[in-house]
Length: 383
Image (cartoon, rainbow, N blue to C red; front, side, top):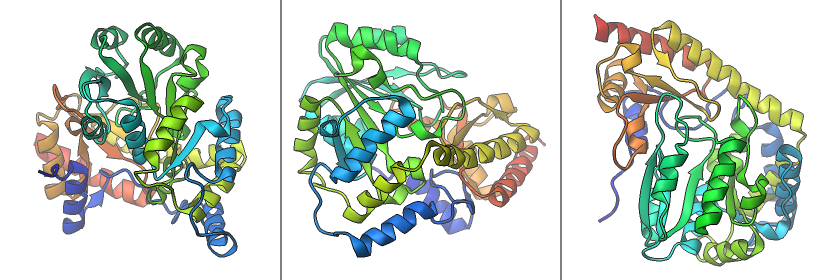
């Protein structure tokens, strides 16, 4: 039996049917970005006419793999080599290739909730058994003690997401040191989904691959779609020590085999853009985040702190709203014309039901109208 349609698809489809403002699905719709950064679009257009559109090497164009290496050296002071890079058709395909390569039937995989909705189906597809650890509001900090308790002698993989979607929380160097001790002690491989690494608004992103004890037992997942606001391009990658990278490539070849050649050339050019370009691109989102957060707060909503991503979380109880997140999200969409995502959708069990996620990767005009509608909706609820 096929899996049910996700709430992300249901909310987006209903928003389209109702002509509502979609602050649910995480895609950018901003005038300052347009259809995407001009530098990337121009590079893709040139690649279509000036470069090959035939099959590239299975593990990715050499130019792109070199650009990925240079990007991480410059932006994160992380030294990797091209033979550690496998280019994939998006980060989700990277996750699928990694899990199929590393998980055998009966292996346990430790996951952290709230989690990206693809994690659990992919673990199960590989034959793995999920063990779930919960982040706890309001700071959504990773509970190391609970993580340690979840790891057993059957644990093969620990899958983490930093910065975390939907909470925006990030794992710092001190926590990575404790996680490293657990992974070494139990001989666990770490998969780290770092697709939001370029959207850190406070502090610096810390990749576990910068931790010596984790360097050769970590698979790092990245996404050009998130770095460049080009979610539909579906260009991602997995980075790992050569033995792990070889295993990942062996599964990747039977999933998508390779990724659109012109887009690989374009992403290679984009990754070579200077740090200042990336900082300015990130600042577009920082401004949008501040714009929406201030208006939601002014309307009486309790906006929770978050360090990263394109999302803000609102605490319903803290906002004086006595509704569960699913009821609130549905009524807000139908009655006020604004689509959001209930945070409980990011849980497989023991769901937190008092929080709603708003995407701020939209034009200020759109955000202002959405905030006005959301403010009026709260007044109606409290009347």
